[in-house]
Image 1: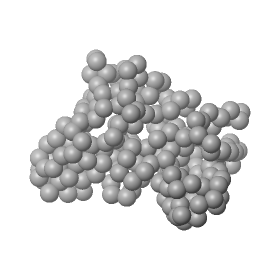
Image 2: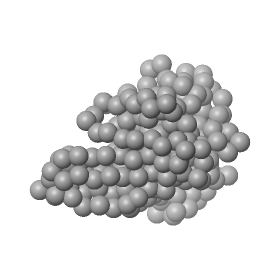
Image 3: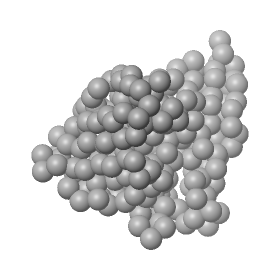
Image 4: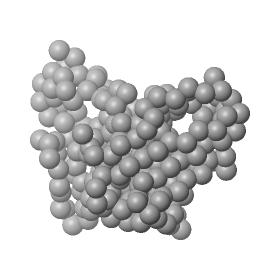
Length: 115
Length: 111
């Protein structure tokens, strides 16, 4: 158990819909990272927050948005869903604003299926 | 920008050795290695820092060549449990620091 909690674990929805994925980081961790992993593909960086502020942004679509709340949990909002958005979405947390001297802890992921 | 890993895939017999490489076009300040079992979350294996410091909690070794912007992961006397996809991870500076992963290497260990 990494200590990172993601909900829901599985989500099936239709094209055009909107979903929210939730992540609670490990106790004490200030950084939250979001990654997208399409079927048998690599981990694509979406966005990072540190202590409530956006720290870095990857190739995140405009239809996607995220935020980190004062209690440090984070939400990833995906709207106008398309078939290609079907993927495993991972959240990871770390204690530093940059993980260069520490590890990231991953949640179990939220598997999104868009039909 | 994404670090390139080689080989893309490798199949081993138990007890055999393997080397996985990670190469970046950007300067590397540290390299992390993770292993992901199918359908599971990536799990941290090791971190390598500039200056040669290493931190990890598994019996897996690695090297980091800062000048060549490369890192290699050495798996010796492989076990069935080593099967999975290995990713290198690193901070890349492109105006801001982004923590990104390499292209991945699939490793399968056969009995």
